[in-house]
Image (tube, rainbow, N blue to C red; front, side, top):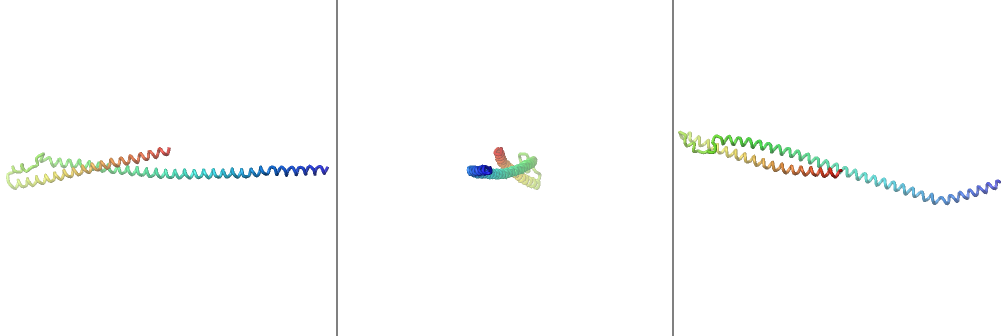
Length: 183
């Protein structure tokens, strides 16, 4: 029987070798498939990392853009407040100037002339009266000119304020547009 075992062992050995030789192409084919699947996984991960980097770069650019626009809006609001304060101060100065002009017109009314001085009793009084009338006319003309300058300045400030409000609206609409792109 020892020969039978040897024969069986030989056949088993031959069968094992044959099976191994037959299976080796399948094993060899599985190795590249695993290598290909791991290469595909690495490529997918690299692609995902690149996509994440692109998303982070876009988010960083958007954040910077938002900060710039917000800063511009805030500066524009400060500019509007400054111009509105100047316009308000100019309006108050106009009101004061108008009151001063009215006060100067008061004693003379519509007739600030030297005719009333001619009724004075003596020449010194008439000369003083005419000098006062001339001085009052000059002061009245100066007050009116100053009032006109203030009105012109107020008008310029009102125009500047309108222009700055338009710029503020533009920045604000750009912020709204930016906000819509983030949704």
